[in-house]
Image 1 (cartoon, helix red, strand yellow):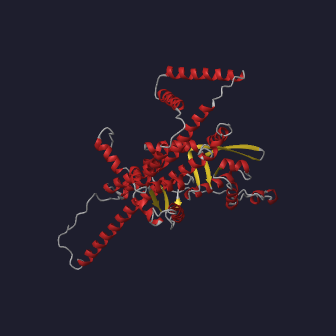
Image 2: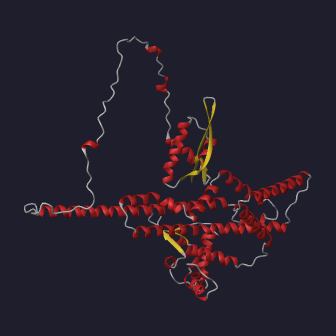
Image 3: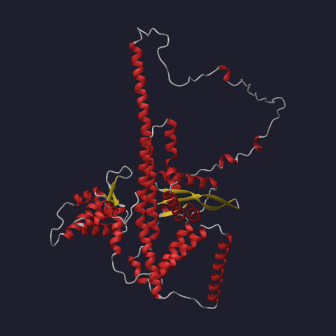
Length: 482
């Protein structure tokens, strides 16, 4: 449904039905917003277990009711109410007995909107205008087929770079003034915060796509082959949507180790400036990489979980169809037993739908005589057993997976993730390609437990030394998670 905000009816519909507006209209909205902000945003947490969140809310209510009992209900009652009204999402993950709570997209929007009401020292008009100009240039050049226009823009950029390089060589470094530094930092901080909040909406979009796929399956009465085709193609169908494509592009960009290192380096570098040193403790940038990886990983897990649920749903349909077919066969057998001693008199008393499957004898292929191996045993000569080298029997390679898993676990200490390339750099391969294949096999097994990621769209090069030679292998980017 497209909303026209110039129509009173459409605006009234949004104000009456959007859950973010409902949150702001609640009688105890200050309690909800303050608690959700302190628990999720201030603590930089994506989700909580039921017991932990209930304990936090109990402490929060105790502090709020210290002077006057404004909120008399039990913490669990508030959490259940907020879940039913769409401010929190409650679900069970990995067959755990304890429920998990996380913010909904509506709650994210409400928190983001109310924090924007805070009065700012200044609005970065110049930074926003420069950002608009940059995006317009990229869109205009990226969408045009005009070869001359693209070439002209690239030549202009090269000329600007040449002038800047020449100025630096002449010790003429143009540094931003303190106002522009704080202005651009404010814009970066705002954009990063909104990006982290957008992941709730991305997860919700994938759930809506999954629900739509289920509805289509319920309304469609397909054959067994069509059901199997849907099972194997549903993930591709979801990831081929605009939401899937843009998330895949984001994830591939973020999983590039060079990009991650650059992001960490830039985040450290900006806080070395005296104008920004005081903002570090309350900024999202120092932990931005890990926050993005965690949020993206949650979206990946959500997508995998939704696809698995849809597969089970389709498989259950096939199971019900099979069970119904078995029931029909049993009914036919029971009817056959009833008429066993009194068969129908007409010669043709039943019609079977469809064409009969005829297997003719002449359809079989002709017999082919197998070739008999001829051994020449006449001209045999005695051999020398001492001339036979059996060293290869005693030099068999054995790769211990437990040892490799121990290496991975040791290198993950103090880290959120590590790539296979980093592992081979810190602990070089000793047994060559066999050891590398064993690492890849461990990653394949851990991927099913959501402890590893194999990104086939991004490759990484692994170099190892053996027998005095250097070997170079390109593999899909493999990342082990803590």
